[in-house]
Image 1: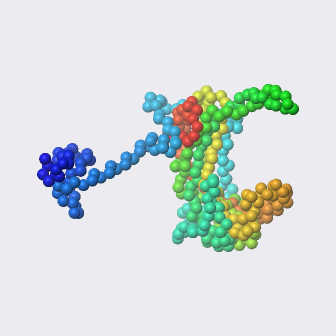
Image 2: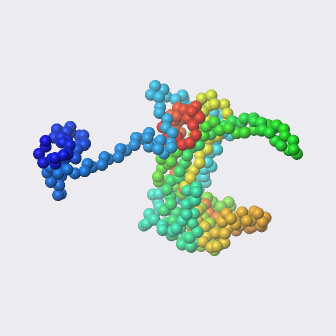
Image 3: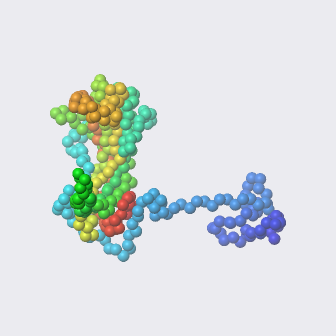
Length: 360
């Protein structure tokens, strides 16, 4: 019996417990603790620290399907471009910065820092884009600058790979009291999986340019904001769009080649859904809010007022609509993506995977 241990309690040995292992005992020898704890007194066992899930377990908890590479597999075959992808790729249209003089571009190293983030209220829509109608941005160039600079988090970019084919089916149709069979075509999904490449998008923007108005010389970022702030147009608006710069054409070609190498003969579509890539600033007046209200738009369509309203709206908006492009780089080269995910893509094609899958 250990001296000082209360009678009637199980005697659990403390001395001689292997070093480096947790002491699963309620006995407290006293000298190991501070405070009011006394030698020989029994204290509750501390709760075990929760174990951190492994990377594979964490992915499964998030609903992400993971592919485990075969260690005996050799490197993927050398990449060869497919001459005709038959419209399989739906690549984002990137703004061409070469049309803008370097003096009109804004780079991070030339951008004056903001003292604190903007506190102007805004809403985030279902696509992760930011919208605001706040009066504070109607005529204050500095506040407009701060607002845009406070919402330059990188966009969320994914790669969606879809495979489908058409099947001919029959159904019974009843017309004029008589039934007959007819055939129809139905699209059948074979696989539809998505890679999230957002972790590879650079957290810092690379450059900002303003899309020039046709027939007018390019303007600087500051001049574009000042033009918006001084405009009296009740329907004025200004937009910032974030683009992740990548060779989407080559990536699409690689993915289609990987899929075709499995023997899959049907239609393939590669798209790049992107969210959180737009910041919209609209005039604060009631006219502007009504013009962007979905209920008002539906009412105009139902009552045929759209024939008059929409042309007038677009003509008025065009005079002050400005678009700003913010560029981000993707820190994953197409060849690196191909080498790391060649077998990963083929695995999910053969498994007919649906949903979000992990990159290798």
